[in-house]
Image (cartoon, rainbow over all chains, first blue to last red; front, side, top):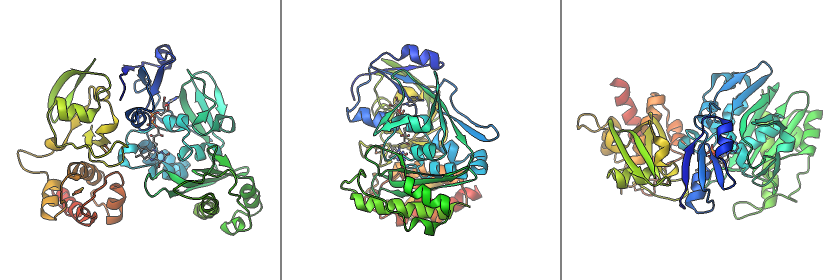
Length: 261
Length: 156
Ligand SMILES: Cc1cc2nc3c(=O)[nH]c(=O)nc-3n(C[C@H](O)[C@H](O)[C@H](O)COP(=O)(O)OP(=O)(O)OC[C@H]3O[C@@H](n4cnc5c(N)ncnc54)[C@H](O)[C@@H]3O)c2cc1C
Ligand code: FES
Ligand code: FES
């Protein structure tokens, strides 16, 4: 690992001050530290957000607001989440392993926008709002491309607001080696139906119009059968060919719809 | 340089190390406790699992300085008055290890698992070991060991 300087910020303003152009924010470190160990990142300064008070889950009536530094394990085991948006707790419980969930955070996961990460699908399917230290960003404007988001260099996610759906579920086909999503599908039904797919798209997470239209007409696993999922613009790599991923998108959608109660 | 100070296996420790020192290297090289292993560079194998405030974490994926002020326990700290922890004893009795390289991490993961869920099922044990890789045993006797330890730990 290259040399670096470690500092702790007291709040987000302090973090911005400490974040010069060669610095990086540090949350759970479950992506950033492995990347630094591989010498694929070389931040001159690491600004730890641990003391900024960004953790916690709030029930605001029709919205669940989750602080950026809330760990996966806290979402997995939260009674409020289990009661209000159980699909989110299920999603968190399927991320990596217990040790990763004991450190990794929702803010870090979303900021990183790994094409195989789980949370981006929930953010998109639930039409969440990403709060930062300077503005609110709608989910559909946030994920720009593989590992790319609408965040500015010195912008810090503070929380994510999830509108409560009438029903939702997440179904994941884990990569047998990494356990990230080879394909993960988050289905949410509220005023409309949204189907967000992670793990499969060359540009990262995306919504599938064909599946959504079919499920608006009939919210049942069988409705998925007739939909064509094209393998164009799907990832094709040594783990799975594009057409296998296309097949998994349909299969995971069926399972998610079946799991919606 | 960064000052690293925390409670390690019940004792206060303090040392100055470069900021980029990984917690596992700090434990092995600065503190000289080599029970905690390094088996990969991708944060996947779990040979380095220790506890911070009774929660299992991968010490290869944290800087030492990030543990400041916390309560850190490594495999050397789980025995009680020179007696093996029931989890260690159960691995011993159930042939839960072969080469032993993965064992310290397995034991640390398993202690958290059983502490959080004393009636843990076989399925839950297998899922709970997601972050720990063993190249020898095929996991069967590890699962058996943890089931045996869970019974003993409930009685204590
Ligand atoms: C073995 C393993 C398995 C995994 N499996 C999965 C999986 O199955 N599914 C899955 O979704 N993920 C998985 N992950 C990734 C895990 O969820 C990470 O925790 C997550 O992607 C990053 O979160 P973090 O808090 O650790 O962020 P960090 O690693 O600390 O940071 C990641 C990036 O986000 C930036 N950042 C962090 N917080 C903020 C913020 N508040 N505002 C702006 N920028 C910020 C950082 O600067 C950095 O660039 C896995 C990781 C490992 C090591
Ligand atoms: S050494 Fe492999 S996970 Fe830490
Ligand atoms: S006993 Fe050899 S790796 Fe597990």
